Image 1: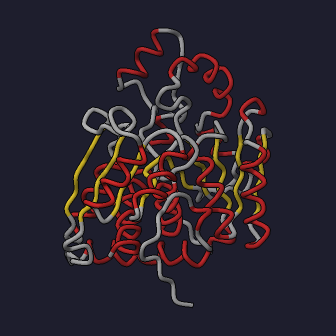
Image 2: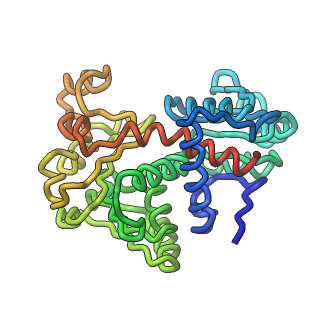
Length: 329
């Protein structure tokens, strides 16, 4: 069956069929091979895109900009200091204006409703660069990395997310695993459990693909994992919750002992980045001085041979490029 995503927004993996997700991954692999071969494309020549950032980023901004430039598009970057959206101009009016200027809009911020409204009112494809409850471009890069490093078909891969299992990265991983027939486990404390509606939605998708979706606070769920994944314990705007998060999540820190519980010598480690894996950042040092070790993974694991985090970071570029090419190319 031919897949045509022209004119589609990319707001959540849940809007896409398994075949459409597979198409984006295959396209990303192809575009990566071409870039490695020094082949520059022109599939976005004459296109203009705008990046709306209410949350800062390294990988998302750079990946969107380089992806666009590689294929010939022009990019405008607007952060919260340069955009009037929600301040002097309503979201609806901003969306309508940007839709007249640009072929596509990327949004990275807080509420999922914002990215949905941008798509509703702009009349052009809108891409979700991260919200409080989803991060679909990250999930594509994660699965692309798994395909490069795990010698199994996806429907035999077990991925365990360790830590706060109700954060945006955990949710997008659960969604893509459900769509692709994978085995997803959210391993974290019962006090930070998954929203019941989110879990039901993922399990409904899993029922159609043969995927397994589990949530557990028991370390026995680590056995047989092919992928161990984690994220920082307090997202942007949640710094006041650090003491409680450290108390709850320290038992789920990814260290050598946790990896050993997988009983898989070929297990790989993934992280969306940035990561607190040492004390070389201002925030990690300041929190340690206050008595809080905020490392969600040890340096031993982060720098080990099983860590594929920088391959994963690079793949943000290739998967985002695939989304741009597929939807506006």
